[in-house]
Amino acid sequence: MEFVKDEGIVLRKSLAGDYDLSITVYFRKYGKENIYIPKGQLLKSPFLHVTEPFSWFYGVYFKRKEKFFIKELDRSKSLGLEIAKDINKLKTGFEILNIFNKYVIFPDEKVFILLKKSLYYLTTDIDTDLFRLNFLAKLIYLSGIYPELNQCVRCSTKINKYNYGFLSTNEGGVVCKKCTKKRDNLTYQDIVTLKLLKDIRFQSLNKLKLVSTPKLENFLKDYLSKNL
Image (cartoon, rainbow, N blue to C red; front, side, top):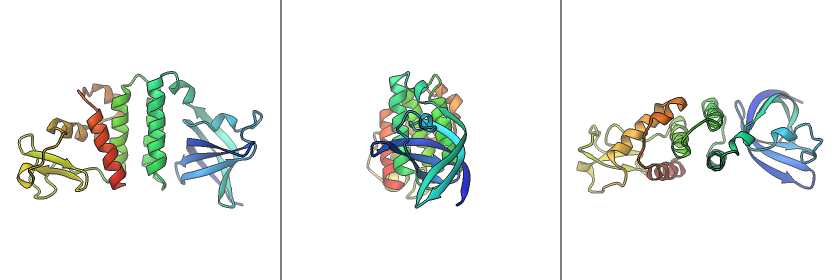
């Protein structure tokens, strides 16, 4: 039997029968896996404290019949109670976990760090609308599918506020006015914002002053669903 060490974050919890539990975890080294916890629903379970979404832990695991099991935990921290103090943060947190669970499968250390940092900063004083926007932008960037924002994807003309036409989900970038008659509900200022979101640090997020985030958020969700 092979034992492995890794750190993971709980994305979701599922009941298995009357006593057992299964938790979906994204590991730093091994990606997304399901951990089976026999008698995990019982109050005397030694792992009960790490079975809720938003829980982080580092420990030793083993695999048997395609299922991961916990052998022992060295360290753990649950951010759920802190996040749940604010209903908007709680909704945002679950939305982030659901997006992550839906689109991220394979191991990627940078993506793991993004999730870990996101949950930590969610416990601080943040604008939840801007926070979701930032998470989506960085997930798309780290997945290697960030839209081209500097030049037209059809003719390679450099884009500015005068020749910007629209941002194409299907073509993966901006299109200039010479190449299209279509006009977007996203403005050139939105394009500038998307450029900033790619690189801005979590602690600097509140410096961004956005008039409206829903249209950008909807675009990024649509872009993610069609390109990842």
